[in-house]
Image (cartoon, helix red, strand yellow):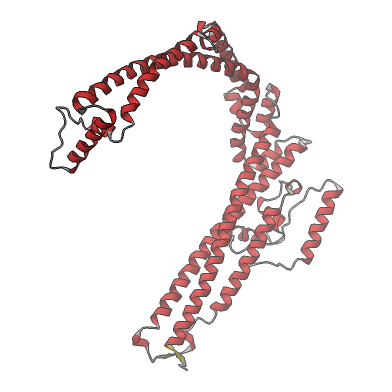
Amino acid sequence: MSNISSLQLSRHYEAHSVRAGRVVENLETLRERIQRDIATVVGQRAEAIKALAVAYLPALEPDALASAEQRTGFRGFTRRDPMAAMAKELQSLRKRVTRIQADERYVRRIYLVGEHGELTRELAERQSLLEPWSRECARFEDLEGFTELVESRYDTPDYDQSFFSARYWKLWAAGDRICDALGMSDFGDDVLPAYAKAAAERLKWVRQVEEVQAKVDAVHSLVQQHDEAVALQPRLPGMVLDQCHTALSQHLKHADVGLLQTWLGDPPDRAVVLVLRRAAGLAAKEEFLSELVEGLDAQLSQVMQRRGKYMRKAQKYTRSKYMGYHWGPEHQDAKFEAKAAKMRTNLEKVEVLADRMMAYDDYGRFDLENDPELWWVEFTRKRPSRLTPRLRSWYDRNPNRQPELDVHDDHARALASAVAAREENDALGYIS
C-alpha cells in the first residue's frame, strides 16, 4: 500500500542522516580517546622496557654484562664491549686534561682573562677606542632615511634614479632634511665624506676588538673543555651504563617474551619476572587498543557512507518530479533507528572496556606462559568486541580458556577473589 508522501520520505531519511551523524561523532570521540590511551601506553611501555633493561643489567660489570646477554639473547655487549669502550674514553679524557693543562694559555689563564688580566685590559682599551667612532657613526645612521640614501648611492656618480620616479624626489627630500639635521651644506660633498671617515675608523677598531675577543674566547674555551673533561670522568660509568640500557631496551622491545621467561633460570629472579610481565602486559594493551582503533575506523567508514546515502535520498525525494508521489513502506529504512541506538550503546560498552584496560595495573599476577590473547580477559573480564575481529576470532576458537594467575600472597589472593566476585555481579555482558 503506497501511503508515504515524498515529503515524508525525505524527512525520514533526513532524520536518519542526523542519527548517523551522531553515531559518527560518537565514533570519532571514542577513537580520539583511544588514540590518547595508546600514546599513554606507549610511554608506559617505554618506561617498563627501560626498567626491564635495568633489572637485567643492574651494574656495569663484566659478570653483569655476561649475565644480561645470557638471559636476554642480546649479543651487543660481546660485539662492542662497553668496558673496553669506557676505558678508551676515560684514557681520552685524561689525555685531553693533560694536554690542556700543558697549554700556556691555560696555565696563565688568570693573568690573561682574569678581572685584571692582560687580554681583559687590552679588550677594554680597544672597546674604549671603538666607542667614540660608534657614536659618531650612529649620529648619521640614526637619522631617518640615511641608510637608504647610502645604499642607493645618493648624490654620487653611481646614483641612477630617474627624476621621473617618485623615489627620486623622496630621496632628495631626505638628503636635504639630513643635511639640515647635521648642519652640513651638501650630502655628497660634506655628509658622505664625514660618515665614510667615521665608518672606516669604526671598522678598524671593530676588527681589533674582534681579534682580542677571539683570544679571550679561546682561553675560556680551554678552561671549559678542561672542566668538562674532569667532571665527565666520574660520571662516565653511569653514562656508559645508561647507553647499555638503551641498546638493551631496543632488543627487549622486539624480543620473544616466552623465551625471555625460559632464560631467567630456576628459580627465576622475581624482580625481573615482575618487570617482564609489566612490559608484556603493556605491549598487549598497545596491540589491543590499536586493533580497537582499526575496528572503529572500519565502522566509521561504514556509518559515514550510510549517512551520505541518507542525505542523498533526503534530497532526492524533494525534487519536483517526485511531488505528489506516494510510496510503500519498503522504500524506508525502518531498522536504522534501532541500529543507531544499538551502535551508541555498544560504543559506551567499548568505552567501559577501555576504562578497565587503562585502569589495570596488576601485571605481576599474569603468568607469561599464558597465551598473550588472554591479557584481554585479564584486563577487561569480558570477551572481545566485534571491533577487534582478530582477537575475537581467537576467543571463538578457544571459548573456555582462562589465564593462569600467579598469586603469591594473601593480598593478591584477596584481590583475585574480589575480581571474581565482580565478574559474577557484572551486568556489562558480552558485546557484539
